[in-house]
Image 1 (spheres, rainbow, N blue to C red):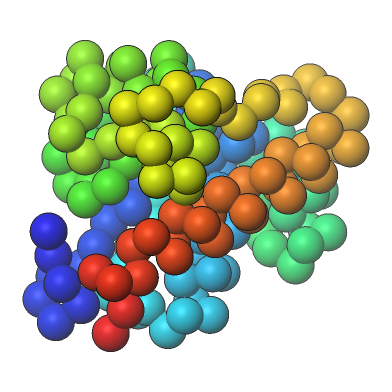
Image 2 (cartoon, one colour):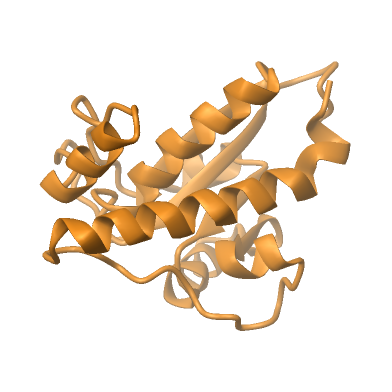
Length: 163
């Protein structure tokens, strides 16, 4: 694993289409990492069934904006082997996303975000519900869930990543 004194630490969030959950996770994590002064941490996102270049969903854009974050320029990315090989830690939104990451050979650096945040990798503690097509209230709840999970995940990473 990298240390703050050497190379960047790359954290990747993965969902289905890279238009709702993982883009929200990406911008939330960027803010929280910045608040910690962890300039050596790079955050990205991708989707197991994404098409390159799609914008973030309207609900995600509005929810991010309501929380002082910007997803207006987000462009979805399909999960690729190179993206996985570059990542130090891959946090997925569900077990099915984790399965795909395992199929692509990067399972040793991956966990469902709910399990990782709880310190229970390998245990099925559920995932983050997909708000796609739902009302803005569902996106707002997804945001709150992700924020808590990312806070807990970063707290677990602090001994390794804190400069």
